[in-house]
Length: 609
Image: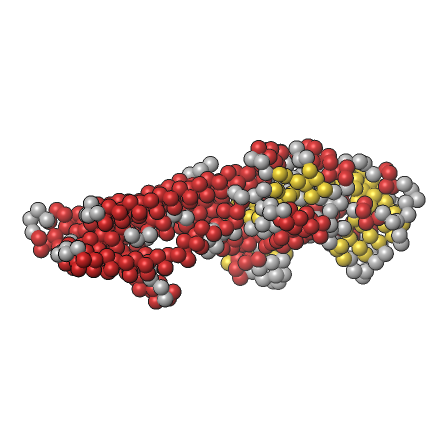
């Protein structure tokens, strides 16, 4: 904290002002003029940023704010000869402001930690064979980057050979994964194999990591509903105080016959205690602390509203592949002639789906030279791939096809089965197996203990869906779902006044993620899924989502407690002042002290977990 004060301009002014306040109180023992000068200097340094904010924000928003009340109260105290009280008021107020900035800085630090995981420069291979070092932001699509063994990959792109990559920064999996020729690798991951050439396929501001960093940055500017409400009433409340205090002084002076100096003094006390400093600080520091905590634990929230909404969730829908399972499929059985397999491999090379990667890896040594490369390959969202008369996809897409070889019956029950069809006839099948994520089992059990209904929505067949649901511990599931089916389930639950969460990682999940009250994307999933979501699980650990669910409950409890406490303090101090039982030093101590307590209460969320 001291290091932050020294490096931060507002912190430096706070330290200087503190020294002059101490000097002022010491000089009071020897000289009134010297102590007054010290207090005036302290007021300048302690009130500088509050005065600047009061003027700029009032002009910009055309409405007064809390800073204006504090500056007026301090000026009023000086006018009637209470320089020490005015300095003390601004000292505690400035301390509270610096403390709130500290909370914001802690949240921003999460961005710095993420950015440090991506190299700032890359070695580019030029056409003449020369290798030069350039900043990553200067890389363009098509550049060739040299990535040495053990280096972090500086940008997203395609590998020119088979490599081993540690993707723990994105997926949480410490075991390196194999990336074949032409497969995409991501910035921030580590090359644990031999050196290779990388063909850049995205600008530095379009990579997976840059998207994650941007999400954290945007999260700070998206307040929760409580914060928005407090922001809306702040200016109206301040105007009410500015109108009410002169009326209060007038009543004491004219109606009650108080001397003007005493009436004005009580008015300055009222101006201080009626200020909503603690109320304004009830939500934002706590929310930023919770967002920062989540980011450190691998869960990114696109704003306070998303964090707040998570605690109100009633039902959680989940995709299967890459979400509840690892998504690293392996072909365990297949049947098709060699030419058909070649066609399938060629088609699946055009897709980034885990099933496609598994099939390509299984038959990577096949020579595809005899395949027609001129025929376009198109992806049928939620179903499979098509190339002319050849189709590859889920069993449901082949229900009307002839099955002369009985492949539909030969496919292994409980596995993910992919069929190949040509001219309305099934020509082969591939049976693939996936692994359940252990942390998914823990997360599902945790949500169910909290009375959150968890349901599985998958495009796989009934047998696969049931097998995964049983292993994970989910009672409710729906199989053979198309993207529109997932949206329908989400909307039907919302029509029953349920707050709906949806987890997914693929393009086909994006519509449901966008329609859900809380869209949750896996960090290793598609960019479209991440763009459509409110929450991103960076390291694919669903147990971290349950941790964040508990954190969101803690956040809401802290915000409610802060609001009740701050309003209670204002009401109590106002009543005491009306009855003349409160002087300015005590008003400053209790009122601004409550602001600091509220901020510190919110900062506790930085240490959770």
